[in-house]
Amino acid sequence: MHEQIDNFIKYIDNKNLSPNTAKAYRNDLTQFFEYIEETLKIHNLKDIKRTHIRAYLGSLLRYGMSKRTALRKLSSVRSFFKFLCKREILKKDPTLGIPSLKLDKPLPSFLDLFQANKLMSQPSQQNVLGLRDLTILEVLYSTGVRASELVGMNLSDVDFSNQVIKVMGKGKKERIVPFGGKAKDALLKYLSKRNELKPSGDALFLNRRGGRLTARSLGRIVNRYIGMISEMKKKSPHVLRHTFATHLLDRGADLRAVQELLGHASLQSTQIYTHITTERLKKIYKQAHPRA
Image (cartoon, rainbow, N blue to C red):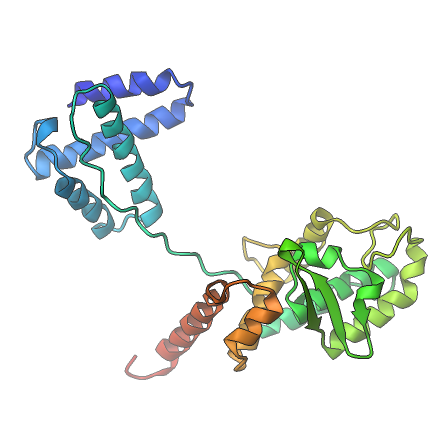
Protein backbone atom coordinates (compact mmCIF):
# COMPACT_ATOMS: atom_id res chain seq x y z
CA MET A 1 0.00 0.00 0.00
CA HIS A 2 2.72 2.44 0.94
CA GLU A 3 4.51 1.77 -2.33
CA GLN A 4 1.41 3.02 -4.13
CA ILE A 5 1.42 6.18 -2.03
CA ASP A 6 4.97 6.84 -3.28
CA ASN A 7 3.83 6.25 -6.87
CA PHE A 8 0.90 8.62 -6.38
CA ILE A 9 3.14 11.36 -4.95
CA LYS A 10 5.48 10.99 -7.96
CA TYR A 11 2.42 11.27 -10.20
CA ILE A 12 1.21 14.54 -8.63
CA ASP A 13 4.78 15.89 -8.57
CA ASN A 14 4.64 15.81 -12.37
CA LYS A 15 1.67 18.18 -12.19
CA ASN A 16 3.95 20.87 -10.70
CA LEU A 17 2.00 21.14 -7.47
CA SER A 18 3.67 22.93 -4.59
CA PRO A 19 5.82 20.89 -2.16
CA ASN A 20 3.34 21.71 0.63
CA THR A 21 0.47 20.25 -1.40
CA ALA A 22 2.38 17.02 -2.04
CA LYS A 23 3.28 16.85 1.66
CA ALA A 24 -0.38 17.30 2.64
CA TYR A 25 -1.41 14.48 0.29
CA ARG A 26 1.21 12.16 1.78
CA ASN A 27 0.21 12.99 5.35
CA ASP A 28 -3.49 12.47 4.59
CA LEU A 29 -2.91 9.11 2.90
CA THR A 30 -0.49 7.91 5.59
CA GLN A 31 -3.10 8.70 8.25
CA PHE A 32 -5.79 6.91 6.23
CA PHE A 33 -3.75 3.74 5.81
CA GLU A 34 -2.73 3.70 9.45
CA TYR A 35 -6.43 3.53 10.29
CA ILE A 36 -7.11 0.90 7.62
CA GLU A 37 -4.24 -1.34 8.72
CA GLU A 38 -4.17 -0.84 12.49
CA THR A 39 -7.85 -0.39 13.29
CA LEU A 40 -9.58 -2.36 10.53
CA LYS A 41 -6.75 -4.88 10.03
CA ILE A 42 -6.92 -4.60 6.23
CA HIS A 43 -3.63 -5.02 4.36
CA ASN A 44 -4.70 -5.32 0.73
CA LEU A 45 -5.91 -2.42 -1.40
CA LYS A 46 -8.49 -4.63 -3.11
CA ASP A 47 -10.14 -5.38 0.22
CA ILE A 48 -10.93 -1.73 0.98
CA LYS A 49 -14.66 -1.04 0.66
CA ARG A 50 -16.81 2.06 0.75
CA THR A 51 -17.90 1.22 4.30
CA HIS A 52 -14.28 1.24 5.46
CA ILE A 53 -13.73 4.75 4.09
CA ARG A 54 -16.96 5.94 5.70
CA ALA A 55 -15.79 4.46 9.00
CA TYR A 56 -12.51 6.34 8.67
CA LEU A 57 -14.37 9.58 7.98
CA GLY A 58 -16.58 8.99 10.99
CA SER A 59 -13.56 8.42 13.21
CA LEU A 60 -12.09 11.77 12.18
CA LEU A 61 -15.26 13.60 13.14
CA ARG A 62 -15.70 11.67 16.39
CA TYR A 63 -12.27 12.78 17.57
CA GLY A 64 -13.08 16.42 17.02
CA MET A 65 -11.73 17.14 13.56
CA SER A 66 -13.56 19.95 11.74
CA LYS A 67 -15.74 19.03 8.79
CA ARG A 68 -13.62 21.22 6.52
CA THR A 69 -10.39 19.36 7.41
CA ALA A 70 -12.09 15.96 7.20
CA LEU A 71 -13.44 16.91 3.78
CA ARG A 72 -9.93 17.78 2.60
CA LYS A 73 -8.63 14.41 3.81
CA LEU A 74 -11.48 12.64 2.03
CA SER A 75 -10.54 14.54 -1.14
CA SER A 76 -6.98 13.19 -0.87
CA VAL A 77 -8.27 9.65 -0.52
CA ARG A 78 -10.59 10.13 -3.51
CA SER A 79 -7.70 11.38 -5.66
CA PHE A 80 -5.56 8.42 -4.62
CA PHE A 81 -8.16 5.78 -5.55
CA LYS A 82 -8.94 7.58 -8.80
CA PHE A 83 -5.23 7.31 -9.61
CA LEU A 84 -5.23 3.57 -8.81
CA CYS A 85 -8.20 2.96 -11.10
CA LYS A 86 -6.61 5.02 -13.86
CA ARG A 87 -3.49 2.84 -13.59
CA GLU A 88 -5.77 -0.25 -13.54
CA ILE A 89 -4.38 -1.33 -10.19
CA LEU A 90 -7.99 -1.40 -9.00
CA LYS A 91 -11.08 -2.12 -11.08
CA LYS A 92 -13.53 -0.30 -8.83
CA ASP A 93 -13.16 2.96 -6.93
CA PRO A 94 -14.40 2.43 -3.34
CA THR A 95 -14.88 6.18 -2.83
CA LEU A 96 -17.68 6.32 -5.41
CA GLY A 97 -21.04 6.96 -3.77
CA ILE A 98 -19.60 8.50 -0.62
CA PRO A 99 -21.40 11.84 -0.19
CA SER A 100 -19.37 14.93 0.59
CA LEU A 101 -19.78 16.42 4.03
CA LYS A 102 -22.12 19.37 4.24
CA LEU A 103 -20.13 22.22 5.71
CA ASP A 104 -21.72 24.40 8.36
CA LYS A 105 -21.99 28.00 7.26
CA PRO A 106 -20.15 30.31 9.64
CA LEU A 107 -22.45 32.78 11.34
CA PRO A 108 -21.99 36.35 10.09
CA SER A 109 -20.17 38.87 12.27
CA PHE A 110 -22.30 41.73 13.58
CA LEU A 111 -22.23 44.53 16.15
CA ASP A 112 -24.43 44.64 19.23
CA LEU A 113 -26.54 47.73 19.87
CA PHE A 114 -23.95 49.34 22.14
CA GLN A 115 -21.21 48.87 19.54
CA ALA A 116 -23.43 50.17 16.73
CA ASN A 117 -24.16 53.35 18.68
CA LYS A 118 -20.50 53.74 19.61
CA LEU A 119 -19.49 53.31 15.97
CA MET A 120 -21.58 56.32 14.96
CA SER A 121 -19.69 58.55 17.41
CA GLN A 122 -16.28 57.85 15.83
CA PRO A 123 -16.24 60.05 12.68
CA SER A 124 -15.47 63.74 13.14
CA GLN A 125 -18.30 66.11 12.30
CA GLN A 126 -15.95 69.08 11.90
CA ASN A 127 -15.14 68.52 8.21
CA VAL A 128 -16.77 67.24 5.05
CA LEU A 129 -14.90 63.90 5.00
CA GLY A 130 -15.91 63.16 8.58
CA LEU A 131 -19.53 64.00 7.74
CA ARG A 132 -19.28 61.75 4.68
CA ASP A 133 -17.93 58.89 6.76
CA LEU A 134 -20.67 59.30 9.39
CA THR A 135 -23.29 59.31 6.64
CA ILE A 136 -21.82 56.15 5.12
CA LEU A 137 -22.03 54.34 8.47
CA GLU A 138 -25.55 55.59 9.18
CA VAL A 139 -26.85 54.66 5.72
CA LEU A 140 -25.25 51.20 5.78
CA TYR A 141 -26.75 50.47 9.21
CA SER A 142 -30.09 52.09 8.43
CA THR A 143 -30.69 50.36 5.10
CA GLY A 144 -28.63 47.15 5.11
CA VAL A 145 -27.41 47.79 1.56
CA ARG A 146 -24.36 46.10 0.08
CA ALA A 147 -21.10 47.99 -0.42
CA SER A 148 -21.55 47.96 -4.21
CA GLU A 149 -25.07 49.31 -3.82
CA LEU A 150 -23.94 52.15 -1.58
CA VAL A 151 -21.13 53.37 -3.85
CA GLY A 152 -23.51 53.16 -6.80
CA MET A 153 -25.99 55.59 -5.25
CA ASN A 154 -26.63 58.93 -6.95
CA LEU A 155 -28.09 62.13 -5.54
CA SER A 156 -31.27 61.54 -7.51
CA ASP A 157 -31.79 58.17 -5.80
CA VAL A 158 -32.49 59.79 -2.42
CA ASP A 159 -36.12 60.73 -1.74
CA PHE A 160 -36.14 62.82 1.43
CA SER A 161 -39.90 63.44 1.44
CA ASN A 162 -40.65 59.69 1.63
CA GLN A 163 -37.36 58.86 3.37
CA VAL A 164 -36.42 56.10 0.92
CA ILE A 165 -33.46 55.39 -1.37
CA LYS A 166 -33.58 53.67 -4.76
CA VAL A 167 -30.97 50.91 -4.84
CA MET A 168 -29.57 49.01 -7.82
CA GLY A 169 -29.00 45.49 -6.52
CA LYS A 170 -27.57 42.27 -7.91
CA GLY A 171 -28.68 41.42 -11.43
CA LYS A 172 -29.54 45.10 -11.95
CA LYS A 173 -32.69 44.67 -9.88
CA GLU A 174 -33.98 47.90 -8.43
CA ARG A 175 -35.52 48.07 -4.98
CA ILE A 176 -36.64 50.84 -2.67
CA VAL A 177 -35.31 50.84 0.89
CA PRO A 178 -36.35 53.15 3.74
CA PHE A 179 -33.84 54.98 5.90
CA GLY A 180 -34.23 56.27 9.45
CA GLY A 181 -34.13 59.68 11.06
CA LYS A 182 -30.46 59.46 12.10
CA ALA A 183 -29.44 58.59 8.54
CA LYS A 184 -31.59 61.45 7.22
CA ASP A 185 -29.91 63.97 9.56
CA ALA A 186 -26.46 62.70 8.55
CA LEU A 187 -27.32 62.91 4.84
CA LEU A 188 -28.55 66.47 5.13
CA LYS A 189 -25.43 67.60 7.01
CA TYR A 190 -23.13 65.85 4.53
CA LEU A 191 -24.96 67.23 1.49
CA SER A 192 -24.73 70.75 2.87
CA LYS A 193 -20.92 70.40 2.68
CA ARG A 194 -20.62 68.04 -0.33
CA ASN A 195 -19.69 70.81 -2.78
CA GLU A 196 -16.45 71.35 -0.83
CA LEU A 197 -15.22 68.15 -2.49
CA LYS A 198 -15.79 69.73 -5.95
CA PRO A 199 -17.99 66.90 -7.29
CA SER A 200 -17.46 65.84 -10.88
CA GLY A 201 -20.75 63.94 -11.17
CA ASP A 202 -24.00 62.83 -9.56
CA ALA A 203 -22.45 60.26 -7.19
CA LEU A 204 -23.82 60.50 -3.66
CA PHE A 205 -20.61 59.48 -1.91
CA LEU A 206 -17.41 61.11 -3.11
CA ASN A 207 -13.71 60.58 -2.57
CA ARG A 208 -11.48 63.49 -1.56
CA ARG A 209 -10.93 64.36 -5.25
CA GLY A 210 -14.65 64.68 -5.98
CA GLY A 211 -15.05 61.41 -7.89
CA ARG A 212 -17.30 58.50 -7.01
CA LEU A 213 -16.13 56.53 -3.99
CA THR A 214 -14.99 53.01 -4.90
CA ALA A 215 -15.96 49.82 -3.06
CA ARG A 216 -12.33 49.33 -2.06
CA SER A 217 -12.09 52.81 -0.53
CA LEU A 218 -15.43 52.26 1.20
CA GLY A 219 -14.05 49.05 2.71
CA ARG A 220 -11.00 50.86 4.09
CA ILE A 221 -13.18 53.59 5.62
CA VAL A 222 -15.62 51.22 7.31
CA ASN A 223 -12.91 48.81 8.46
CA ARG A 224 -11.03 51.65 10.15
CA TYR A 225 -14.05 52.77 12.16
CA ILE A 226 -15.11 49.25 13.13
CA GLY A 227 -11.53 48.65 14.30
CA MET A 228 -11.91 51.57 16.69
CA ILE A 229 -14.79 49.95 18.59
CA SER A 230 -14.38 46.20 18.06
CA GLU A 231 -11.65 43.55 17.93
CA MET A 232 -13.57 41.33 15.49
CA LYS A 233 -11.33 39.78 12.85
CA LYS A 234 -13.63 40.10 9.84
CA LYS A 235 -14.28 43.80 9.39
CA SER A 236 -16.09 45.04 6.30
CA PRO A 237 -19.14 47.07 5.21
CA HIS A 238 -21.00 43.74 5.22
CA VAL A 239 -20.76 43.72 9.04
CA LEU A 240 -23.25 46.60 9.08
CA ARG A 241 -25.53 44.71 6.68
CA HIS A 242 -25.45 41.75 9.07
CA THR A 243 -26.02 44.09 12.01
CA PHE A 244 -29.01 45.68 10.27
CA ALA A 245 -30.70 42.32 9.66
CA THR A 246 -29.91 40.90 13.10
CA HIS A 247 -31.22 43.93 14.98
CA LEU A 248 -34.44 43.93 12.95
CA LEU A 249 -35.11 40.27 13.67
CA ASP A 250 -34.18 40.72 17.33
CA ARG A 251 -37.00 43.24 17.56
CA GLY A 252 -39.61 41.07 15.91
CA ALA A 253 -39.34 42.01 12.22
CA ASP A 254 -40.91 39.57 9.78
CA LEU A 255 -38.35 37.37 7.99
CA ARG A 256 -39.98 38.00 4.60
CA ALA A 257 -39.80 41.76 5.12
CA VAL A 258 -36.10 41.53 6.00
CA GLN A 259 -35.57 39.45 2.85
CA GLU A 260 -37.13 42.23 0.76
CA LEU A 261 -35.08 44.93 2.47
CA LEU A 262 -31.83 43.02 1.91
CA GLY A 263 -32.68 42.22 -1.70
CA HIS A 264 -32.23 38.48 -1.23
CA ALA A 265 -33.65 36.41 -4.08
CA SER A 266 -34.16 33.45 -1.75
CA LEU A 267 -35.52 33.33 1.79
CA GLN A 268 -32.83 30.73 2.54
CA SER A 269 -30.17 33.46 2.33
CA THR A 270 -32.01 35.49 4.97
CA GLN A 271 -32.56 32.56 7.34
CA ILE A 272 -28.90 32.64 8.44
CA TYR A 273 -29.87 35.60 10.62
CA THR A 274 -32.43 33.54 12.51
CA HIS A 275 -29.54 31.26 13.53
CA ILE A 276 -27.74 34.27 14.98
CA THR A 277 -30.74 35.32 17.07
CA THR A 278 -31.33 31.72 18.20
CA GLU A 279 -27.70 31.31 19.27
CA ARG A 280 -27.86 34.57 21.21
CA LEU A 281 -31.05 33.50 22.97
CA LYS A 282 -29.47 30.17 23.91
CA LYS A 283 -26.43 31.97 25.31
CA ILE A 284 -28.62 34.30 27.38
CA TYR A 285 -30.67 31.33 28.60
CA LYS A 286 -27.58 29.42 29.72
CA GLN A 287 -26.27 32.43 31.57
CA ALA A 288 -29.56 33.35 33.27
CA HIS A 289 -31.56 30.18 33.95
CA PRO A 290 -30.73 28.44 37.26
CA ARG A 291 -31.17 24.98 35.72
CA ALA A 292 -29.52 25.69 32.40
